[in-house]
Length: 225
Image (cartoon, rainbow, N blue to C red; front, top):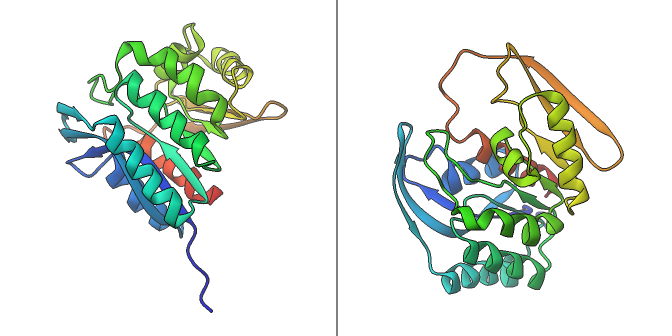
């Protein structure tokens, strides 16, 4: 009897340009040998140059999407990306707990690479209080880590402090992405409450960074599944 592909549920926004959001997630999950399912939280009008519109999906529709996938497809992992509002953050947290979704990867999408804000300011604290304690892994960039930890994160030492803060606040592990470091060598830092891991690479001279955070978190969820 053929083995069923493990299912990964992406709870995130749609990117009309296809480079980020659920479109990037589905491509990545497939590349990792898993089957991607989605609960769309927002429809964005965007391309590689920026975001020109955001339409949040009603909370009851988002929760119904999660329930439909959870009750039939039994996800082996899930991830969240763009959640847009504090109300959606709270609703998604309830759904993750209610359906006991395993291997949850939290990508705290707050600001697009283009600079367009993708999360209401009043939702930042809600992510810390409601989603961090559920996360097997949180994957913030430096700007997001600073908002979640409550202090500037601008160098590897601060990245370590922020990783510790996120684990203390409930995440089982934190992976801080160093792409925004102002240095020729970039550092990514992972802390699981016991062990540290670092990856150091030279900076690449490229503007092709749209959707990299979505792709990374989807890849981790695919690997966990």
